[in-house]
Length: 167
Image (tube, rainbow, N blue to C red):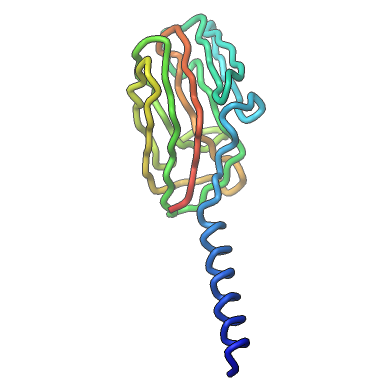
């Protein structure tokens, strides 16, 4: 094989490797700062609103009901693969220190978790959060979701730079 052909083959292999790597690192989450990326759930007497602010989304919990999941910011229509490992990362801060449950779940009735059930300790300063989990019990359709549970107390929570990436 001539030198020119060898270089061409190596270049094609390199480009192919980059393509595969790029696909594996695709962010399944939607941009945090866009309100259309989220579904704001409010149940019973719990009330909240959501708006973009700079490079983040801010959720303001105005009324609570005594049940923390009665306010949730949810990214829906995600498709995770059964048995695959994922990394969820984001930055968050709050108007006062608070706990924020973070879950990966199916977005359909029985609402079971699919490998991620953690609690973020959010402070008044920006903080990085990173959770690794194995997706188990995913939906057969594009009906998985990431839920940030915010109804435990009143106040504001800012979220930015959310990523959900397969390992």
